Every structure is written in C-alpha cells, then in structure tokens.
Length: 269
Ligand SMILES: C[S@@+](CC[C@H](N)C(=O)[O-])C[C@H]1O[C@@H](n2cnc3c(N)ncnc32)[C@H](O)[C@@H]1O
Image 1 (cartoon, protein in one colour):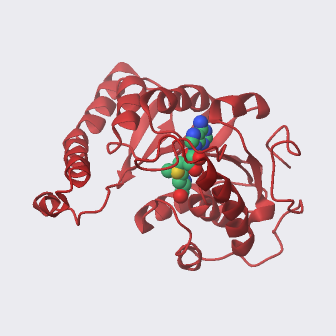
Image 2 (cartoon, rainbow, N blue to C red):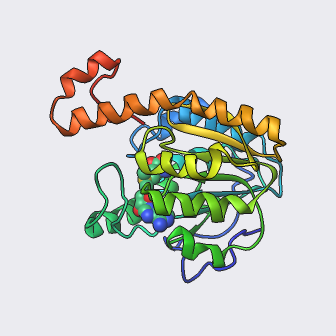
C-alpha cells in the first residue's frame, strides 16, 4: 500500500506501480556493490546502519527519506526493507542544498539529479518500491498522512531547515521508531539543530553514530535518562570541532594539514 497520499502530481519517472516481493532480495554486500557508482555521500558503515534499521521493520511499516539526491541511500533502504514496507522519498531536486558547498544555484544539475535518481532506482530494481514526492520536506508534510517507523533525514543542512525537519518530521516518528540523521556532529547547521532539539530533549534517545550518521529512537525520557542522553551526545562535540577544522582547512586549500587530525583530506561525513 502506498504511504504517500498523492502520487501522480509529484511522482516521476513514469515507472510502473507494484511490488518486487517475488524477486530475490539482494544481500548487503550485493547492494553496496550495486551503489558503488551511484554518486552521493554514504560510507559503507553508514549504509550498514541504514540497512540494519530498515531490515528490522515488518510488513506494514513505513520509511520516509528526506533528501535522496541520486538514490544512493534510497537504494540501500529499499533493498533492505522487507516486502510490505512502504518507502517514501522526498527531494525537490530544485538546485538548493544539493551537497557540500552547493547551497544555491544548481538548478540545471538538480534537474539531472532527478532523472538520474530514477535511472539509478530502475537499475537497482527498486523503482517500484518507492513513492517519490518531488517537494521540499516541509511542503511534503501535507502530502503524507500518519506516522513513520523509520525516518532518514539528509535534506537541507542549514540550521533552519534541518531543525524544521527534526521538529515536524520527528513528530511523525512512531513510538519506538527510528530517526537517522546524516551529517550529525559534522555539519554546523545539522549539529546546531541537534543541539537545539535533541541534546536536551525528552523524546529521542541517542543510540550512536556511524561517522556522521546518528541514530535516535523515539522513547520518552525521564529527567535522569534525559541527563545521560545529553551527556552521550555532548561527548560527540570534540569530533564535531575536528570536522569543522578539517572543512575549514580544505576550504582554505590547506588540505594537507588535515592529516594532523587523522583525515585523508576529503570532506568529512
Ligand atoms: C546530501 S544530498 C542527499 C544525499 C543522499 N541521501 C545520498 O545518499 O546520496 C541532499 C539532498 O537534499 C535535497 N534537498 C534540498 N532541500 C531539500 C528540502 N527542503 N527537502 C528535501 N530535500 C531537500 C537536495 O536536492 C539533495 O538532493
């Protein structure tokens, strides 16, 4: 059953509807090999965390991904999700907040992203598992009814939109459900949003991270657990500072110096 309320106006790709329940499901290794050439930002460990979270779901559960780019993470989620799990992806492919240092003015590239997104889903054999809303995440709220069992947030990384996603979409996460946030303790905007909404909050328990992919579970926290939860997140802040310094050195074309911080000179995520 489709989880998104609307489809024809926002779905794209002209793909057939249906389910791939009859086809043999790929293993994690096969899936990770299948996304090797799909551009995006997701390490093997992060793919593993997405895979584990999606694999735990049962038929009837619902996944929402915010920020799909060219489909790298969506393919992992859709390949791991058992039959009967509904998957909705949300991405306006509008040219804003496209990736690191690509905040505005990428309309042409983003239009290509949308086409390549569907091509990649088709090539991976998961296009018929996904309902795509080509909308901004806040606009998409009114096109999606009900709760979410697994929410993956990897859309706009500036403070205001990242915070709005955590607040509005986080409120949709079912009790016991999972919220995964990419670029946590790495992007300044996303980390600011986490500090504002989650570090001292009482609704989501921090469960750890794979690189910048942080995992939260929706559970009520009493004051004592709330304090421990804040401390568990606070210990990630030195890693955040390290990532900000690495990025500043890369922008200043001093990438070689990042070795002093254990980096290989690539953008951390
Ligand atoms: C970092 S990329 C996502 C990477 C993707 N998850 C992957 O595995 O490769 C960020 C994406 O967020 C999208 N985006 C930007 N603003 C958005 C918004 N308001 N709502 C949803 N997605 C948005 C961009 O179009 C871009 O494709």
